[in-house]
Image 1 (tube, helix red, strand yellow):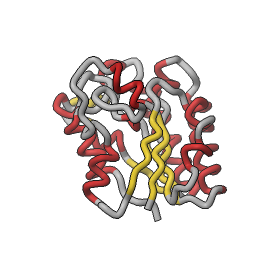
Image 2 (cartoon, helix red, strand yellow):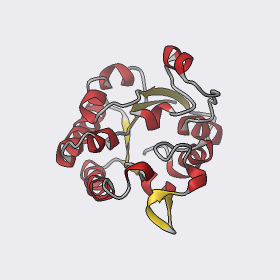
Image 3 (cartoon, one colour):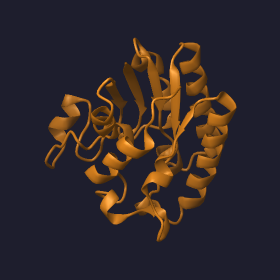
Length: 194
């Protein structure tokens, strides 16, 4: 079963991985393919093949523009994004609408669809915490309204002792997950949508 994963740097596997070999060649640290939640999800369920279509820094409108190409030939579509919209001061309502459009397009294409919420952002805390929680509430509402799976990335990496932030061992640079963080996302947060 082919799972197309469409999103930003969290899907790509930053900071230690990127699906694009040209980008990998520019990474100034040791590469590690385990720095992808998809790698861990694939080990958990070997029947699945993952197509990583993550691009660092993209907003939801930019991610949406790539959906049809990313989804071609897939059985499942995972939609992830929104943190770059928040980082650039764009309205969460627009990001949520873009995510809903992607979910609907995936369903139109006959795919099983899962929608991931936004991770805690240590470097953006506390300014971004409110917008992240607002967007995540909207993401959960979209998943419920559209009848698709919600991947709870935020809750999987939130430090219960420091709400709104990832636990130190689950982040590599206070922006992205560490290999351990990606492992948690792939093993605990990802489930194949029905």
